[in-house]
Image (cartoon, rainbow, N blue to C red; front, side):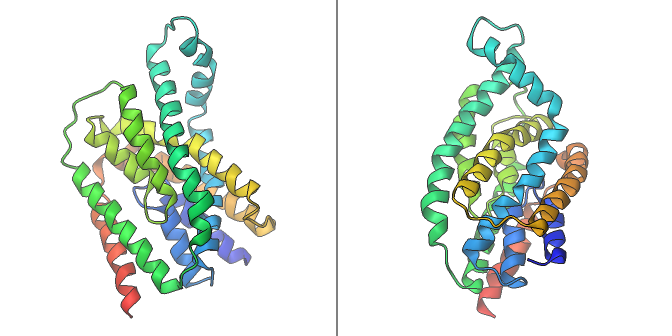
Length: 264
């Protein structure tokens, strides 16, 4: 990979990871159609690019993470005094478990078999993007009913998050949409979704490293640092503006363009 390609991919990853778009789809489309990657290699590299945005999430939510880690003994030992942080801790642990049960088999058994032509790959990604866009439009009709975290909601959200390893399924889009449909207010849904991303992305990065799917070089590091920088910028903007933005139509538009490209 050339240095300019690494920078471009890092920028795209940083800007799209926290939007209800699929950063994996966006970077995969660029790698397949412009940089000559196969679908399989593009997906693995797209997953690895999440390292930068993982670091940006850890930096932005460092206080929340420290608070969660400090309170783990209280949450599973004696009766805790900070019940809200324990609800969040148990929610993230439960959802991560469900996500791993779905996502790890897909990554271990499914992604290695994805060796299609660029056009077929683009069609598949387009279909998944349309699905994400439709979910975004549905979520806008959900009523805001609850302000408290319910542990029972962790199972469906974690289950759905597991499928976000597939290109085109937006992790943030599918989790935020699900939480909104369950009655969480927008600010809380975004915060929970972003905190949920940290353990599952970490597991995915460890997985592809152990599978030896990524070649580490200076350009790979540049891509990670670029996605870290732009990820921090995007996450700050999204926290303050996301509740007023609906990206459903944009997802569908990009998905339709990708699908039509199959017939050209």
